[in-house]
Image (cartoon, rainbow, N blue to C red; front, side, top):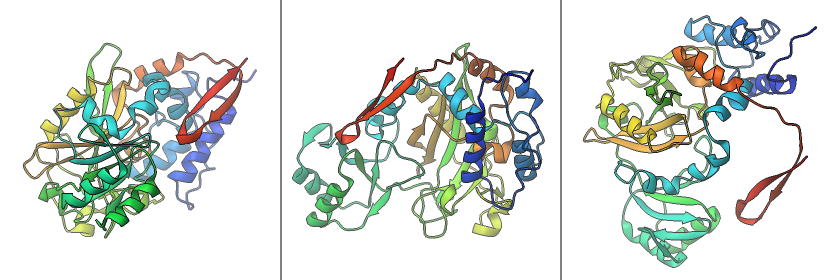
Length: 367
């Protein structure tokens, strides 16, 4: 009798499709080990292909049957650690200043929340919002604040004339923020002068209540030549950050089987993240204010004075990049995480999704 797995075949094949679409280069022979199953996950009730070990180990040299597949991660691990039903509200970038008022963040000029403009916490009109930005005299960025991914919609504001700003705001329509362009530490800026070169760091709250910084997976991201965004999937690169804050020279990219050199690409070597321990301490403090989420991916940089600057957090952080660079995600905590993911109850029901104006939606379950 065939083994019954917690993840079904439809989920298993979705995980393979996602990986092939977002991470794997076309030249990789994914079929070579696709039908081989991971003993580690099989013993714990999950069906995971050894294809992931085959791919990741070619880049990082770390062979393991513990690499998370995309379906197990997105359909089981994340929902077992983080409240999916609360996620969307907490991901609104406009609430960051309320959650973390004492943490350095980019200076905000205007917020738009659900179509309503706000200046310094007070509701304002479109004309007042336009006037505030036009009069600021700052280099500014505009970015969507909900349902965002991979830096989509993030742009420089290059025209401060009122008519141009009014047209820009009307095009973004609702749920966006206008902030001063960040001036980052010069050591980070020299990696790529045009982009905000950030770090992605991960914290995990264990069931015993302790907070862990997952340092083997921390990495720095930088944009491609002339880019504003540090997006790895759009021409940028990423390098591991060692425990002491020293940036590794190896540069990784999605859709590539090659690993390049930071020094050769940028001329930068022996880059040490300023105040790295202070960055970590800040993120642990911030995680304690997110009681519904046990696993968080943080985007942060460092200001010219060495102080950490919080950019955003991700409650469904991708693990493809970290595994590509540093081995199976969660490291020593993986068995605990998988045990949490196994505590799932499958309920079959008919579902309808209702979508309303201004982006409101909900699922109606009819058993």
